[in-house]
View 1 (tube, rainbow, N blue to C red):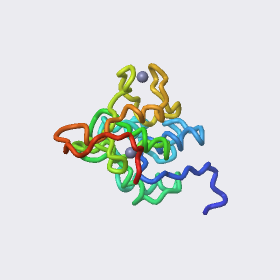
View 2 (view 1 turned 90 degrees about the vertical axis):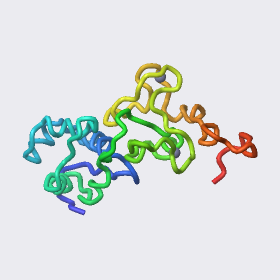
View 3 (view 1 turned 90 degrees about the horizontal axis):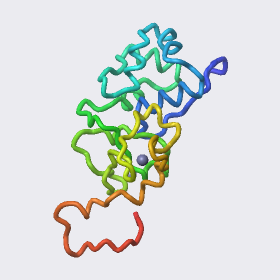
View 4 (view 1 turned 180 degrees about the horizontal axis):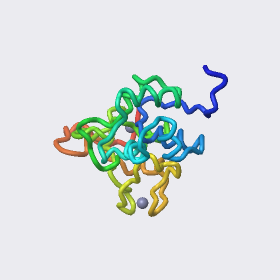
Length: 181
Ligand SMILES: [Zn+2]
Ligand SMILES: [Zn+2]
């Protein structure tokens, strides 16, 4: 769009969470929290909070409008990326989704949602090998467990399918036929 823009534009992936996107944007442009805060005229601590859903501070509508001009993303789309009001505090992951699109998705953090809709796999709340919790998505540039270094994409084989939990119909034997859509 604006050819005189000084920013390196980062396109949000479908379903990407706000914190994950903001982290990618800041790294791509080598912008500190302070640089963003100064540009928007807000406190540095607010920008830091925006990247940490547990702090429960999201940009207001006016702040989203200002931010949209900086990141070149529609403010309505920014609103959809914000953490859900009913937030599952632990950062979660569907490794199958991540293998397709390496972003943290806002839907994984909805309280009460335990399964990825797309893959019918239970969401992971910690590394399946070492048990370490996942970092806040803003710091996911390594794409791996920070403790044992298992890649997020390799965690796919440890994700249980929905059938294996709870009352599974006896006809549904896990046949390892792969995921046919
Ligand atoms: Zn998935
Ligand atoms: Zn680990």
